[in-house]
Length: 440
Image (cartoon, rainbow, N blue to C red; front, side, top):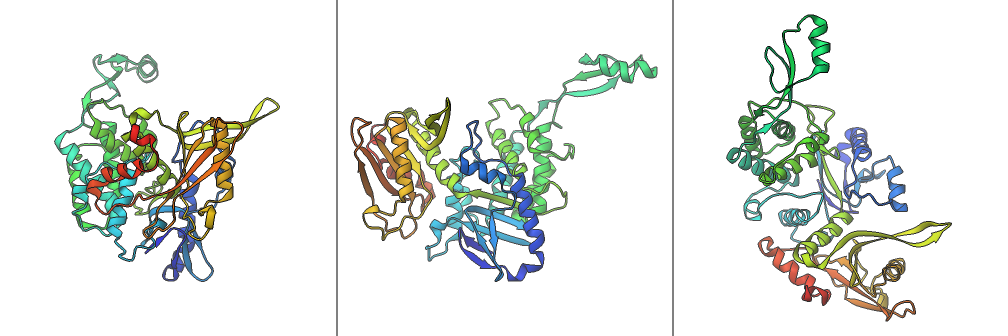
C-alpha cells in the first residue's frame, strides 16, 4: 500500500496482524539511532521526543485506517508492505511513483548520514515500481560490481596455537592455555595474515543474506546470489553496525567505503530485523524534515565550497545564574552574511500579507538574526507540485543591528523531471534565492 505523509489509507485487510505490526514498529522506534548525530545539547522538543517510547511512524484509527506521520520510506512486516512518500507529491495527478522514488534517492545522495552510491542512468532504466526493491537493487548492483572487479583482502588478526612462533606470542594465553596444561612446547600466537576471509567481507556477506530474505524481485535475488557466490569462502558470521566501525579501509578503497556505509545503514536503526535470522521484516523510514534540511545543506556546501557554510550552528540567547539558556539552532549559517532556516511545511496561499508564515517562525528568525548579528535571513519552504505560494520579504526595524532585519521567504522546488540535469537545475534555482550565491 502507498500513502503520503499525514494521509490515511484503509488497513482493514490486515487487522489480524495489527498488534504484531505495532509491536515491531515500537521496537524499531525505541532502538533507532539519531540520524543527525551531534555533540550539542538537545533542544527541548528533541528531549521530549527521546522520552517517547511508543512508535510515532504511523497512527492507527478506530475505523481501520493507517495514517502516516512525518516519516517517509518503506516498511515491511509479515507480508505487509507500506510505502510513504513526501506530501509535496500529493497533488501529482500522474502518480509517477518511479519519479518520486528517483527524486527521494537524489535528495538522499546529498544527505550526510544517508548516501546511496548509484547512477541515475542505470537506475532510471529499471522497471521497479517498489521502493524497497529499488533500495535493495542499489546495494546489490553496486556491491557486485565493486567486489567482482576489486576483491578485498586485508590483514586480519588471528589468535591460535601453533607448534612454532608466528607473529608475536601472547604470554597471557600461553600461560593459561599451554604452560598450565602441559602443552608448553606449543605457542599461542597473535599474527595478521593477509586474508580474503576478513571482517569487511563477512559484513557484506551477512547483509547480503539478510537482504536476500527480504527481496521478492528475481533480478535482485539473482544479483544477491552472485555476491554470495563471490564470497563463498568467507565465514558466515552475524554482524552488527558496531562491526562496521572496526573496519579500517585504505583511501584507495573509496568504493568499498560506500559499500561499508550502506551495510552500516542497513544494520543500524533496525532497518533489517536482526533478532530473527529468517525474518523478512525491513524498515527504512526517515523524518522528512531531516531530509529537506540536510539535502539543502549538502547541496549548497558541495556547490559553493568556499562559502564557509556551517550546519546546525547552536548558540544561546541568554544567561541565567551564569549558565546559558534558551537554545537556538539555525539550520545553515554563512558567518556574518546569511542565515538559512528550512521549514518543511506547506505555506498557506490565503494568508494575505503574512504569506503563510507562522508568527512563531518569524519570532524565531528575529532571535537568530539578533544573536548572530546578521541582518539577512532566508526562510525556505518546499514547493509542492502545484505550488502557488508567492515570495515575500519582511523588514523588521532593529536598534541592535546596523540596519533592518531582512527576512526573505521563499518556496524552493526540489522536484525534478529530468534527474540527469538535476544538479544544474538545482544550482540555478538556489542562485535566484540570494545574491550571495551569485558571488560564490
